Image (cartoon, rainbow, N blue to C red; front, side):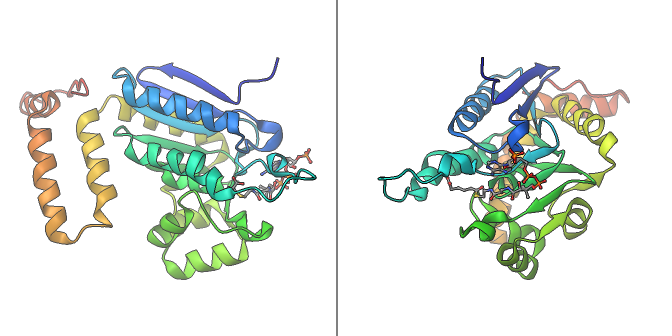
Length: 263
Ligand code: T3D
């Protein structure tokens, strides 16, 4: 029987999604896209899931599109790659950004092409020191996709974005952290302990407020200051009506740890 392309484990409020095609460095196939879409929709729907952790099986995080699926078929014309983005990659990036729960990426190895986009679309990225990020598109005659042209200049600045996109040079994890592309690089053997502990901590947090904070930060690059101040007002109004805000204030005043319900 074929291995599942995505392993899903749910424990203590965290849905851990492990891309599971290690022999292909977890490259995306249609089946992997479909499994990821199902898992992220579930994470959005189920209140018991309060954080998501995404990682890869084996030595890679994700090598982007599985190029074996793109082998030319004699007698068939060129494939419409725009359709592939419309159907799979763009919805994936939107699902991650729109999910109002924290998403942590534990980048255990190379993240190439759309695999880099997948990592950058997550809210907090921790990478193993031996991992790297590669805008592999130019190596095969493509344009960066999966949000890479949006994330790269915003996270690392346009000079670095342009250079890595045009050259396809690998950015080692430590460099990626220094550039602000990711949150931090940690020793390889500490990666999963650190990422799991962070996801577990986030899953105990005020989920609704964290989701609203994510929405505010994600909208900030499209808003001017006035629009952002208005958005903060509206979201704070909503957070202030939440049970977790009342619990947070009560816990502070009673000098005890807060017990957030996520509501
Ligand atoms: O098509 C559309 O829908 C449009 C959307 C496109 C989105 C994209 O992501 S386009 C970019 C696609 N990805 C790439 O071009 C990256 C291809 N892979 C590599 O360049 C290298 O594998 C890496 C730099 C990522 C890692 O190199 P290395 O030396 O550590 O590993 P390796 O030996 O190249 O790979 C290990 C195995 O994984 C190998 O198989 P083998 O020889 O042991 O049987 C290799 O063929 C396989 N593999 C790696 N990446 C892919 C792959 N197989 C299929 N597709 C891959 N993307």
